[in-house]
Length: 228
Image (spheres, rainbow, N blue to C red):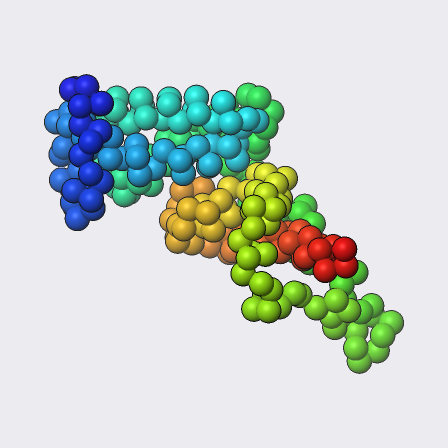
């Protein structure tokens, strides 16, 4: 391959309309500009996902570097049974999972489905009326925050982003990985379930519980702000 720095100046827009088969052909021919384009496009997302498996940012970067090396070494054997993006992210997840389990950071994929029944309820039961309240049993005591009336600058503030990131980092492995791919990386439900080996139902449950916990953390923050 040529020097990566020599081709790094090629604008990403030059590849935007390129079909996947053409990208694969270019990679197999050792085209450095194509590889740089893929690194530019996916590296940050790979680091974010790796971080859901491993203990720190430095380890996540190491896993991503290993992933890119594996992509280069394995591109000739890639049979295109999935998209190139899914293949790259699967390599990352397999390596990050192995590293995370070794470092006792994450659970094996096979445990994600089995752990669903052991998770906390999506919404704190204390937010509903009790069974002793007759016809009002199960109704909201504290209804969800109306995000439409929350000032945009509050939602987009650095403090809010920090709460979201901190809450996601504290989630159980399955929830953490699903919400990262769905809400941070913008993957479809089908892509996430396919990559993580989850059923559609379990993928939906994990995402719902993860979103509920993030929402709860934000509500607590907004309530504390309004009373301070």
